[in-house]
Image (cartoon, rainbow, N blue to C red):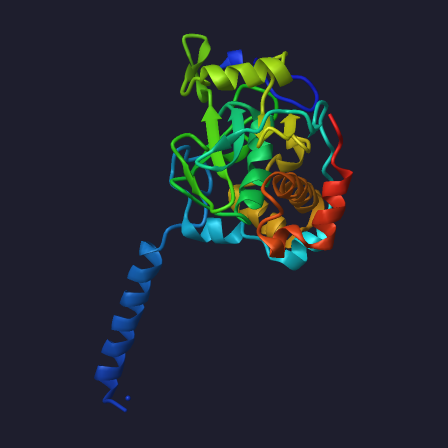
Length: 284
């Protein structure tokens, strides 16, 4: 079992009228057309057994664009800053393409990364959009087994406000006693890990060089026994522990992004609850 510690996940190293017959024929044709349309629509999320690697549908991405009023009603929710999270005023700026960069380092196997990705997708969807995002589950043989989530491996993100760089170090299945490697952090990314995350734990986040977080903002246990549709539905409505934890964490991440990207866009960053959360961000 991959090593875990509270608030963070495993080390990176763990790797018209008609005659009756015409009417009947028309009804049959309509039913047939509806059936074809329904069958051709992509499912919002997999059901039953996990379908790791299946493309995330447009319905799911739309569901995770949570209404502003719901986010405002949750505020900080159930989010709790993990150890080491905070603003670093003296840190060197982390930029890419002339914009602040959000660097995420995690692994498909990691249940804490699995939980945090839900919050990240909700938060980042307020500033831009994902493409090529895929469904994933955490390791079936680790704590919080097979937690439904997504993977940033080979995903793309577009935003006028920030650049998102997602590094998934390993997959969710063992090969020869180790999780199969996917991506290796660059020398610069390794340097950031060494500086801010000496224990090599994941998930690791660096927002523009100003905000660093090691670990997840909530416990993956709240997602136990739920599927993607259920999690997304509760998150979109801010209901229960799932909604409160995911949206609270997304709001904290939103505040951190606003602190690094010049408070853009104003309709997000100037909301009073976002401003309050930004003021409450811990100082590292």
